[in-house]
Length: 306
Ligand code: ATP
Image 1 (cartoon, rainbow, N blue to C red):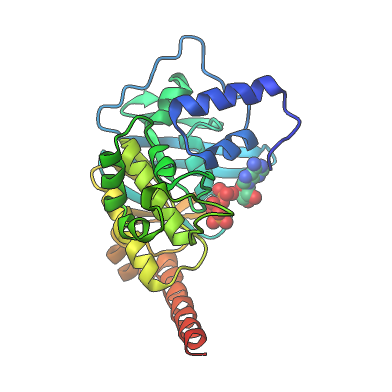
Image 2: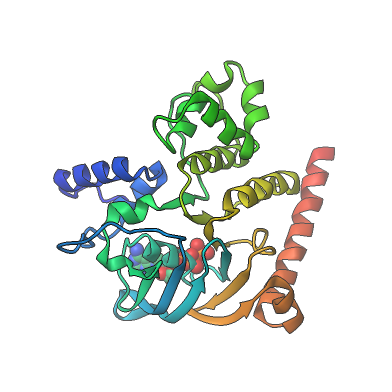
């Protein structure tokens, strides 16, 4: 939860940092909810991103020492590749993303980006190198163009339109009264969850970070929207080092590697086909979700026919 009683100076610092590193507004709430003890080390240097490879080396973590969350976690995302983390609710998936952003530091082990320990670099440079497409995008009560341009202040109108095209939200915008100048929000244009997510994707495309975290939506999307979003996500992930936090399994099929997490430890890893052939925990999750998706689709169709 947002801690309303933190000192104002801390909020000011957080706000400035967010402005500098152009982190999404969602992250502002996240940062305020996180640990203010994590600060730059004296003499911290900016992260120098060459290709953006990520390495978790034997990482252990707990929020409360009585309850370990991650234990001895090691994996690598080679530059430009995609790794998806799957696992039951509470397995520790989002915690991995929080550690990558250094909202917390590991109790043991290290996290390296292009060989640099993220504990030793400035937070602004670290967060500036990572883009996030969150599951629930909060938009500003401002124009669509403003909401996209938030990814990179100073981007030209053409760049904003180009990002919207890549995110496959351009036709929707052009069909709205006022197009890119249409106001978003209570009294303006109301966007569905899928449309908001595509605005977030356009924003991230404009930011152009070498590293990407995709926090997959937990909410059910119909299969058409899901397909469209998947296309847009695939485009934004192309050529970037990508960590997918998969609450559902829709985005993981094409990942270079899937890591199955259970109670903070890796229990299976491999490609989708390898894990299905293995017939273990992932295969069981997959068939369960497949059945749920089929049932959801039947219900949706029945609702449309009513
Ligand atoms: P989901 O799929 O439901 O989002 P997850 O795998 O992403 O789950 P995490 O959010 O990483 O799970 O949480 C892992 C565990 O850590 C959970 O048991 C959660 O209750 C606990 N946890 C998360 N955040 C905090 C916090 N700030 N303080 C204490 N415990 C926390």
